[in-house]
Image 1 (cartoon, rainbow, N blue to C red):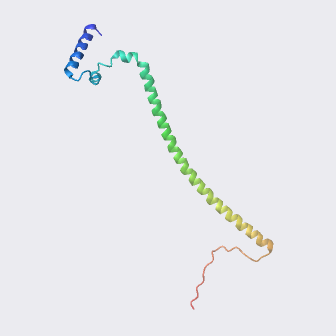
Image 2: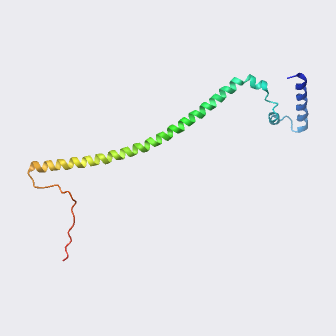
Image 3: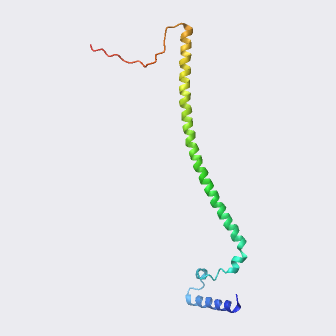
Length: 127
């Protein structure tokens, strides 16, 4: 930047400061692009790249955490269903084991009891 241009800009900034009435306003400087110059970006390019990479990494970690939490919820539901199925199968197995054990004991004792395939029903008389 030329010295004459810089002097012109500095003079304009000073006149704006005087005309504001409430003193120096860095927001207005930022708005007009005078407080952050090309030299600032040239000096701090590595810092800005590091910050950009860190922000992108944090966004990636957040996405990964959310997808893993959704997968954990899905697997918990599947686990509950599997546990329920396991209990049902165990109950059916225990019923079968008890039934076969009872049949074996009846045969060993020589009793004339038989396993009834149909459930009992009630006979109602019309007296």
